[in-house]
Length: 347
Ligand SMILES: *[C@@H]1O[C@H](CO)[C@@H](O)[C@H](O)[C@H]1NC(C)=O
Image 1 (tube, rainbow, N blue to C red):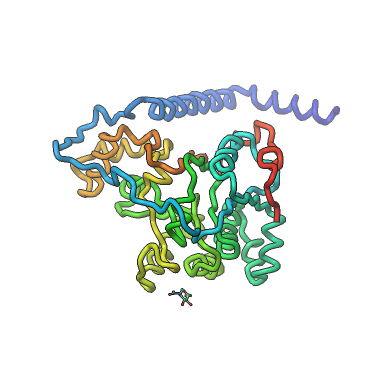
Image 2 (tube, helix red, strand yellow):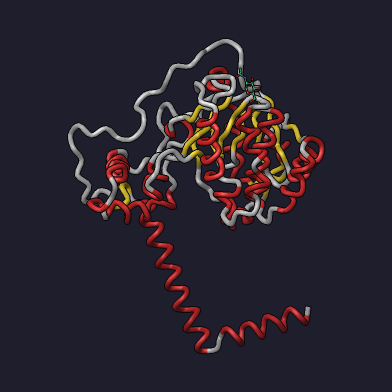
């Protein structure tokens, strides 16, 4: 007790020195300003897109699709009816509760698996022991979470969804039509970030068991384990790279038993990540200097008012929580998974 009081006293003395106070003051003002700039950009109806010089021709057609494809409404399933989610243990941060429940509500006759760190290690030890060192060697939880989903889908098949994915409609039509389906980030993300199209994202993935694409991802984990960036090592860049390789080496229709279907972003990732509004605004502010495809992305964002809402034919929405940097998670009490999903299976 005396120790704590002592430490606090020292801290108060240190902090109240004039130069420390000045530094803290400047820091506080800076952070407050930054906070407001970001908030301002996020809440405004159009970002500043409304005022940017972005000429839009009458006949302009925005990126993406305007209506959904046809799906079978009956018949056998090609992907087993299982929802998989992962968390470090069975106590789910309460901010995810409503999104977890949305999956159960829209898939009442599907199984629900929650994979914890312990059950993940058990699965890997039993079925792919040579990957255990790779899995345990990852320094950040995000790489373990990424790698685990490929192993689960390879072994069990089903639909994997991140905790910040919300289900809007049942995925049964996709599970009937395809043996593997994947989502891509909103078209504008890779186009304005890097000038390229088609960034496969791993926040929602689905496949039959033993699908060769999941096998390819799983088998390449060791080779990429030491890549500096999470994106390259286990994340979206890793998935995108192997998606391209797989389809180059095994060209086959999307609905083939070994095929992969990359869905238009409207289905699964209809809304732009709000943390990018500010950057996209800066990019599109230099409209005349952008590549044609980037100009098209800026026009699409302006026409679609920054894509803030899912469409009538969106099946899921991604809430871009960036859980790995979000310290707010710890402020609210967690909920036991059995409380949210009484029939949840923990392997
Ligand atoms: C699917 O892929 C597997 C593994 O690559 C292969 O053995 C099998 O013959 C393929 N099936 C068809 C129908 O092409």
